[in-house]
Image 1 (cartoon, rainbow, N blue to C red):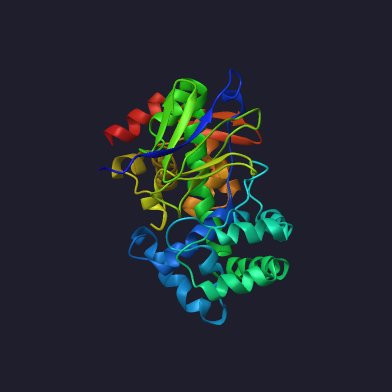
Image 2: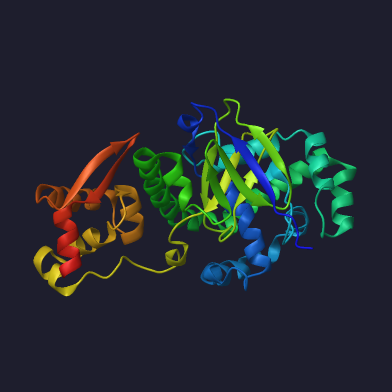
Length: 325
């Protein structure tokens, strides 16, 4: 007999769609990257990062993290807390891991399968000390193998959030979840995610946090009570994450606008911010702002404030210049 499909299901009340929010999670990316390190072939998109990082990790013992975050199946939730704010802060995330109640951490460790039982037994023997060790190792791993790459990863995630936020504002939940992932379905008043376990509950005013990911690609992940509901989904454009430099600008466009402004206009295929463009093009935010002002004055880009950020996008005139060049 074919295996029965299982779902995690969140039931939305009238105003729950308004409580959907996006957030970034540096610690989620850090934890997800542990699987990439152990099985680079399955995550071949990240091979440039693996090659850069592996030689640096000879002096750090990751065995306990590998046990709690196995290659497949359940990984302990306490190392990936649901983001509390939209803006990423690894130090704040790590502090929340350190504050995990030992009994909670021990219970979650017993749910892990496929890991070295001796490592799990050591954690269970003194979960308070285990939580402290895990947090210390995460901090060192971040400093050695992840911190310098985070701005690039953040730029990709930021671009996805801007695009998805616009989808939600224009088309509502149906359009937002329509192409989020094949395993995610919007069914009238509920959101279902295909998993290998069953869960169904109303959101109940807690809201749903949507977190794009680069390192968990191409899969989705969920968190449910006692944590705030969270859906982790693969960000758009992960395949471009480790490509270097800005997109090439067509020769005619570069001759008209200058190479840098042509590259900026080409890069604005999706709405983005000054900081994201600066990271992508290895220029200062000030330099990017000057170029964007010229493009805006020429009617080629438009700007709109979104929270504390200003988002830029091409106008129809800008689109036509890029497309015909």
